[in-house]
Image (cartoon, rainbow, N blue to C red):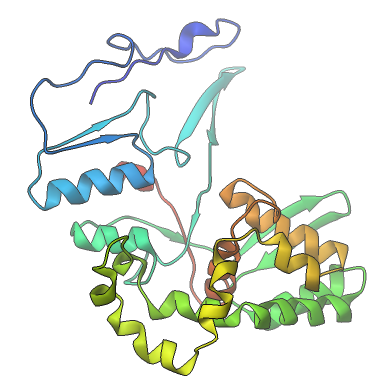
Length: 272
């Protein structure tokens, strides 16, 4: 892969210069079985797995760094170098075999990635600082009691939301995302989920919720401002507040953020 991106085009700031090789259109000449345009997490996974299984693969990227929204950029100020994350840096289930799609890809590639664990997220808000505890349902409910405008009501609404989405949340563990496909082959790759479907037939009735905007469900259940704001902030990892974020995003949080162990990325795109 070759890149063309020159950070020196903004002379008002001291920044390192990365010389390119043209207009982002150059690359290794030849014929390829697979050409992937874009080196975000999806593109890197596609390219890596294609190469793993013997396809001659080319991944194209016009930016200076691969990783898509999961990369960093640096700026110099008063002699110091400051690094900023472009996108999300929180990933669950990377430190052990799990249902995390990225972890599944790494396992298929026989790659290991250094990760760090964390137990909470700190928030600075107009009303002050508070910390969202990860890995404990009771601690989060205690936080709602302390911070929400109406603590008991916030806890009640939070549990009602979890219950409303619980069936779909369970479906995320019944079928590995790696087994989902867009052709008739999905009948074979998802056969392992039949026991779950047999005991939870209502999952099909709620399935449209997975691809709908989360706010349509939240608006029917959650009224406490603090809790609504919290849900919006958790959705920010996918680039939207609750309005615009797929319900599947919150399913992931509900199912994973209250387990004992969490991990964060440590330059995931570099390992890919």
